[in-house]
Amino acid sequence: MMGKVSTTTEPAAEHLEVLEQLFAAEYTGMVRLAYTLVGSNAEAEDLVQDSFVEVSRRLDEIRKPGAYLRSAVVSRCRSALRRRRVIALHPPEPPAGLSSGAGELWDVLSDLPEDQRIAVVLRYYGGYKASEIAQIVDMPAATVRSHLRRGLTRLRKELDS
Amino acid sequence: MNRERNRIADRIERDLNQIADRATPSSTAWEAIRHRIDEQDTTNPTMEVIMLSPDRNVPRNRSRTWMLAAASVAAVALVGGLIVAVNRNSDDAPADQPAVSVVDTTAADGTTAPTTTGTIAVQTVTLTGQFTGDYSVSYVDGGNGSVKGTETWTGQIDGTGDVTGNIKNSTKLGATGAAIHELAADIDGIGSGTLTVRIAWTRVDLDVTGEGTISGGTGDFADATGTVEIQYLAALIGSDYGGNSFTSDGTFTIELTLPADGL
Image (tube, rainbow over all chains, first blue to last red; front, side):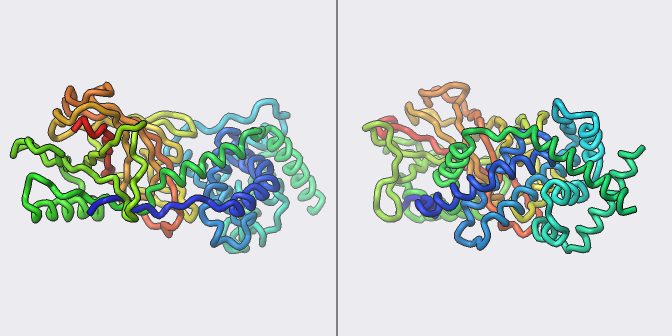
């Protein structure tokens, strides 16, 4: 007796419909968010698309696909930032065409520890409260506030100088 | 103090929005996601059991031994010398020829697996071994590296399936690479056909697809000198690693898809 057994299944039509709605609502925003963290359009899209695949795979278990997607995107961005640091690859160049102020912010953000960077971007670009960021990044709110405080202090110091 | 705080906050908001405006989401992103999902559904070997056919040239208990050995290799990911399970579908195979294992294309539910080329029935030979030699890796972040095929990779996988932590070689999302796989024994006499490679990593749930050639060419396996060159694309899949560390020893499976009359 021989043969192959595979557990993979095709996604159901309604499954795809939910994903498509999620895509329409969230994709652009997620790419913009990822871009502010990783600074590469191709990588941002790759991370977000990968997150959609993750959502697709777990859609039956997820109660809030949008929230899950945000967490997945931010987590992947964090991993990407860590990989860069660990394997000492070239840091991303600042996006072209930025004003000097935005370029300066980019440089300082790039130097922040990734958790501080993520907290700052989610707070000041995403507009999330610390408690919401805590849910997205799966950290205690107090830890997020600490990251925000330290990140902001560093930004203020660097940008003012 | 509050005014100062607001000033810096306003500036950060403004500049971050300017940075975000540089993002240019692709107009074909949905199609790309659909493709990835479809690809995952067709290539994700989440649980695949390859059972070896009885060897027609040896007593049945030897065949069972092979089945157990193959299952053990897959289950515990033993890193050792190349294990080639070659079970030739030929009655005139010499006794000292490596065993040839012809994987039946009949699925467990009795239907025929879609492993046909045109109208030609094919059979699949499964070779199991490990990577040897160096291979190159290019990262999605940019940059290139060289990795020992036999090197143990270590790292942490976070809750979404990403690799973090002390991993410096490969297993990056979207990593591409090539490996040279030295066969322990040549496989001449198998015949002509095409080679497809499905790399089933052990212990790490990777979505890996690849194409391979034997001895730098395709077609006549009779000319093979025992080298399989593999180009592959690897991407981590799955998410339930619980933050545990993992090692990947690169055990993989090569499937040779051959016309039936080539055996």
